[in-house]
Amino acid sequence: MPFRDILLEVLQTTGGAIGAAFLDSEGESVNVVSARPFETDDHALRVIGAYAGIFLSQLRRATDSTDGGAVRRYKLDFAACRIFCCDLKDGYYLVIVVDAGSVEGIVWQRLERCRGVLLGAM
Image (cartoon, rainbow, N blue to C red; front, top):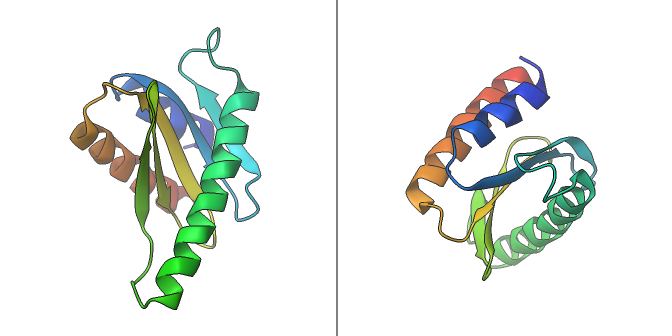
């Protein structure tokens, strides 16, 4: 299954989804998909994804220096949205942006399912 189709599926099954990005270790977008193309353009999602990767790298450094273990996932809450990020392999990672009112448990479930499919396709 192509990466774009995998991202489309997670957006279609996640309430309040705004967009998703699959990125490499340099923060470059492999694929980006917007659930609301007239509200959120791909460029904004690419920028969010790149900054999510910077934050992921900083978290890795912090946990490495404190023997905190590997960073697998994290979430950032903002007034208008939430950003969910998870590590894949070889530095690749996945970012999903949803409305602030989205149900966190469901988003994590959809993210984990998407993660598994992406890992299988890599």
